Length: 161
Image (cartoon, rainbow, N blue to C red):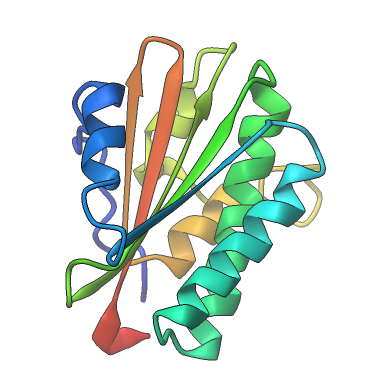
């Protein structure tokens, strides 16, 4: 079962350091900066799907990451201040497929910052399914908050793709 490697302790350090590191190699890392508005969820899905395909990801992994990005981008759009949403794909590690979503949060992230608590809501609940699905689809989920910035890193082992 996926989700066994859920972490809360991963830290990107300062957001500026994180951004610089993510841009270290154009061959291994790609990013897309979007306005945090509803239409950007579709653009984020398209970006990650196309980027993963360019790097040879299997179709099932592309589909899973499109769902994961859709959920995380939508949360940033709904709970953030609308300024920006950044999607990173990092394929530098030959053992992992890695995607990060970074945005602003005007609300206290709380539950967002504890991936080990993410569970799929019950059938009668009005919402709350998305983060549980993210946790289920990924082998490793980590979160970080610095100031008003929230970042979520999701990884999946390449051999399990």
